[in-house]
Image (cartoon, rainbow, N blue to C red; front, side, top):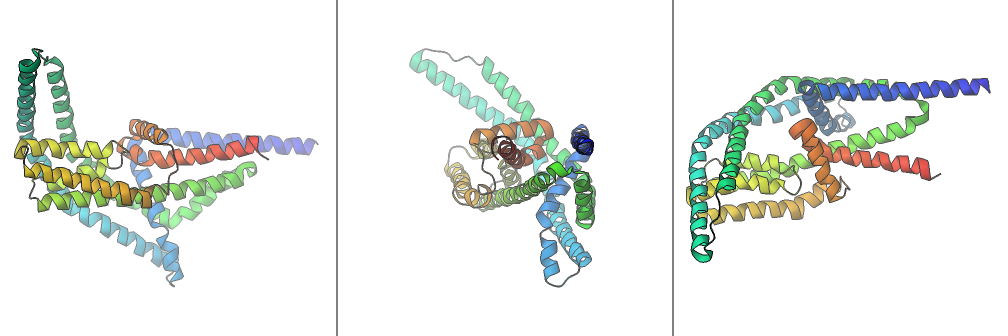
Length: 347
């Protein structure tokens, strides 16, 4: 009896220590975003590319050779486009700033025309206080966003060196790292923790890969269409559409607004504007009708309201990266909640 109580006490101590280690690690990562963000990105990339390692091993390649092949391929296919795209995007961002006053004048002119028309027809005069406040807010935010794009790309240059290092050591020592964590896991929750961690890794890796493919398809479609229409800043607008596509529901609308305002100011309400609107509608229709159901919806089974709340919370904690990982994290938490429910209410 005394031995049993001692074993139970030891298990409770192990459980408390294990939970404390997880909380300390989590809080530490939250407190150091400059380290946690590239670390998280490296871990996500590792989850995506690691399945290629056992596949190459089945073809007769040893583990070290398979790791180097996968790692070298990742470096090439990520670095080459990055080096080619960054200078072009930076130049387009610098040039598009000269168009902001033109867009502002166009919006102001159209608003004044609307005010005059309403006054002539109804004798009611629309105030301009809130309009100019909103215009000032948009001007500040858009200018800040454009100025932050080169800074964001510059931070990517730092990640270019840090993230591959993380990915390489995860490929090389990932199994040893997992074994170390499992050794700390108490016996009372070992099976559940192993199952849940496996499911979380699978959901996270599959979801990020699916969203990457989805965003790439949308971005490439819009960029190609704008180039065919000979619209300036095609690459920048395509990149904005791809990035905002990761935000559920409102992302496609947010990604469309910059191109719409530019087209109105540059081309007016003519055929070019209509072609741009059709292009965005077609790209997002392909995404909603084909790409999303095939790639993304099978990975995540969440209520739409849960998805929106998850994205908002993720953006507050980790910015853009938080938006990307918020949905698979919410799916993993749902999985944990289901396991807890089974443990408490079912035999």
